[in-house]
Length: 440
Image (tube, rainbow, N blue to C red; front, top):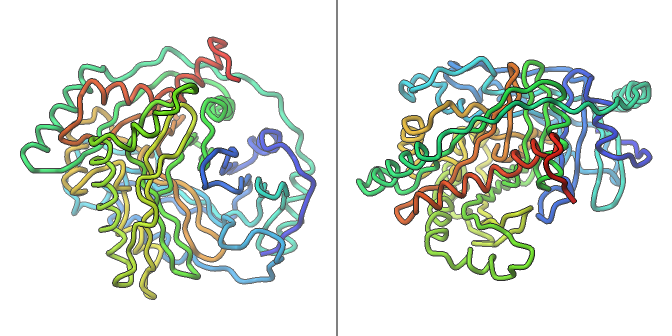
């Protein structure tokens, strides 16, 4: 991997220069309060694409041969294991692609269920050291990126038009929650995540909606991806998996447990950690992720490193735990995804039955929402976030989902209110575009 340090530049300015170019992608740390997100990356002009459509029996097999690239490394630049070689996503709907899963309630399509693009060079912003780099496969790809980028001009921002927002009826969502609690009482599942959707007509530049979402909610693992016929706008703070292909360390940081964060309420985080319902919801997901990691782990290496940590985000506190293991020597990227996808924090436990209940109770297929997005690095490792707080723009519409984990102690009214709290990043962004609110 070749690297060249360049003059610092504002991320949004870079984005507005690159966004009209083929395959524009932006992995955004947004300098949040979380421990994740040291680097932001901006890219365009991919050289390859992996695209898997719904119905493929083994959707992760397409990533089987994506591996490490060798070459000279500048010791002062980001490590190859921290730098994207491929950027993309795995849609939640990939879990229903294999015929062996059973017959899903919803038809899927036309968006792909796996989409990753290979970027020979990209721009990296190191928020910790205040440096900016162009990183690539070799000297020539870095030079080509710099030359192409140097010919671009920053385009003027053009506000998009967002129509009236339709949302799944609160009473219908409440009934879905009650049915989920019934299944829990019957012993069919211990926890299940149930979501609802907001949608509206959309015209114009999706990047400007994404910028409004960035202002509404600063998170460490955001992503904007122009996929051609659709765009992905994610403001996620949840680490799904990070796999270091060199050390074989696999880490997940599931989030479960939410409370509103008030500027003047210093006791909210303590109330969240002490809440028995939130503790139960979180603990079951941690156990599920321990089980998932155990499928690919060296015996005895699965551990919970930091349980029940309260992390602050814009308007919210979340409970987060860190679960890790060392994978067996023969374990591949494909095997890790087979063992862990879809994320346990947005499905439930036991996972297979939770998937079936979600398909029954929700009103729409999830698509990309609750899947995973991020990158495969230059060392062949994997860094993925959970696709929550995520909007998609396609076919003249924008859609956004929000949900929550349901356990036996869940209060339906409180759960409905939680979805509306989590939807604020989208609703506030739309309101800001329409001039209805101002952000600091």
